[in-house]
Image (cartoon, rainbow, N blue to C red):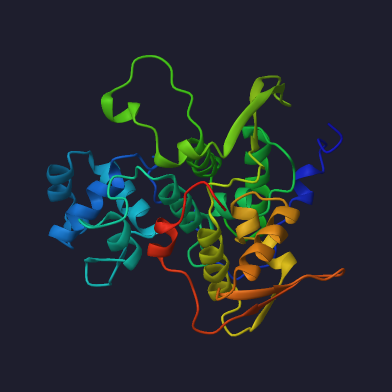
Amino acid sequence: MPWQDKTMNDAVALTPTAIAFRFSGHESFACRYAWLPKAYRAIAANPAIFFDEDLAMVELGIGKNMVRSLRFWVDVMGIASPDGLKCHALTEFGHSVLGPEGFDPFLEDERTLWLLHWNVSSRTSSALFAWHYMVGQWPYPEFTRSEALEAFKRQSTKLGHKHSEVTLAQHLDVFVHTYYTNKSGKIGVEDSLDGPLVDLNLLIPTGERKGEAGRWETVYSFRREAKPEITSRMFEYCVLDYWDRVSPDEKTLVLRSVASAPCSPGQVFKLAEEEVRSRLEDISQAGNRGFNYQPSAVQGLLTRQVGIRPTLADIYEEDLFHA
């Protein structure tokens, strides 16, 4: 391919940012299906559970490294956050989705999975490097593990870090395994359960090619389709959430920001700019929504409507298959 050359990774440069990236904390485990509901119930019963690892191992039935990993995923997926007093405080999102009367306490609804993907991929505070980089800024249609790892090493150095190749490789592998799994051989029951975001089919293998070391590697690409399962209310919710994070004091936002900026809905959901434009127009025409969209031959403009925004209830009440 023409973009595959030795200058490739130099061309993939992170946008200058003050974000403090996280490269570890997951203990090399991708989040597993049963973990988040289990963690929600454990924190609801004992907010200090994750700060007593021995107790957490007994209560949750997982090993110490998995306890630490789950504590990490609870935070980055927006279920609970540490309160500074060796306790976790459950978030509104955690209560609304996973609570006893929640919208989806067992992660059975595809909308929940897209919201979890949004939570982890759109972070601008303590953002996960792999997600910010691969979801938010990787400019090529596909990648192999060695290509992405080489880019990780270059960008980590440019950001002033001195991470080992092992740390970067583990971080990359956790990212890939969050969205794609290729199991083989005999595995335990716990390991047989894919992570919840695998079901999104966002990352798909498209073939193999030989790397510089002479080994054949899987080629991955992101699924870039319209994705009607990301409903109109959900998209509106995420646009306003993104707006709050990057430009909370601005009354207007340009189309390009929503469609292609790092952590934006267009990038996180891997939607073409034309699809983003179409969604914004439909939302605006529906009336009484969180923003108005004014098309333009040069650059479309969103204008925020004060005091109007969809709730999680609005998202779950909407027809799943009609955007």
